[in-house]
Image 1 (cartoon, helix red, strand yellow):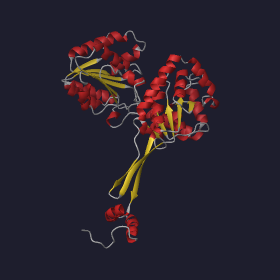
Image 2 (cartoon, rainbow, N blue to C red):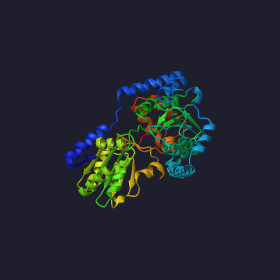
Image 3 (cartoon, one colour):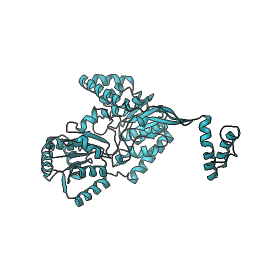
Image 4 (spheres, rainbow, N blue to C red):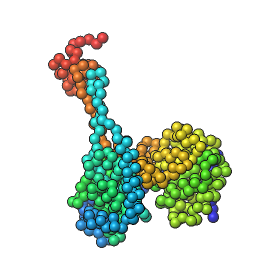
Length: 444
């Protein structure tokens, strides 16, 4: 069997591999996907339920009709009957962790005196949010908690979920129970670009929302890009990415397992190990080959590792941190002796896992922070899903007489310099009325 992961030694080769990885994961949407998504969105806007039903029949459930768009209470009761009690208890604990973490993120409103000008910021939640929960090849119930709980922590009044029906029109019971446990107000049997459009503009059955969040395939991401402006969105996430920085003391079997677990999603997941130990690199590669043989998703894992995997031998951990900042991965694990020191050198990563015990799956399911994270290098300029995606901020400005007087002449001058005479006059009228320095007063 060929080596699963390419081992790269030397800065020139490393830079070449980095460029290749970066180019693969810029995730430019192909023109045909963009066009198809636009056509779907336009049809949903024009035709409403009829278009959603037609696309749902085509992609998910051949016998679908508009009467099944909204999940009925009886389906939730049946879902609880089918869900194992131990799973329900585990989900509840995970959900509580996610909610508690995001409640601590909440920014405060404030209003303070700035030399006669009372300035501040008022923070309010949006009224409604829609969460897209894809089907893919497994029930993604964790995406429910990771997307709904931040909205709940922000105080969003109405939260809905759109998730695809199976061939028989049902939804996986674990996804339904997750929605119920997280307090979702309405669950819609729909997904894909048509669901994004329905959530943004509404249909006869679907009430529109203010913000649309959640993962999905390239058509979903294209649709989110199209509807932005009609609604807010979180990010345009692509396939999962993970980078591990490890030194010579790390356990190679653990490192291999962590690379593998992030390679099993879709077959095009980026997995990178950067280490200053050639012995560790060799041991990780050997352990990965051994571990993959026993796993159910071996084919997807092999594809990710062979086509999107890399073990980078670097001079030291500082060079590994530099590599991370260039790649800006979705997940970063620091399997090093002193992760708290190394993390100070990290500028760009969606989520950072400190130490060997905190494997990424802890964050995927239960630790607290949302696992909806920027991909494709977007961690250079964006962040993971948080309460901030469901909040709007209004700046507050109140002028006392002293504050008005302090600013008035400067504002008149600046407005006049732009040729905006009406702006200057709005200030001058107040000065003539006695609020501020008289118009004929000379500047000192």
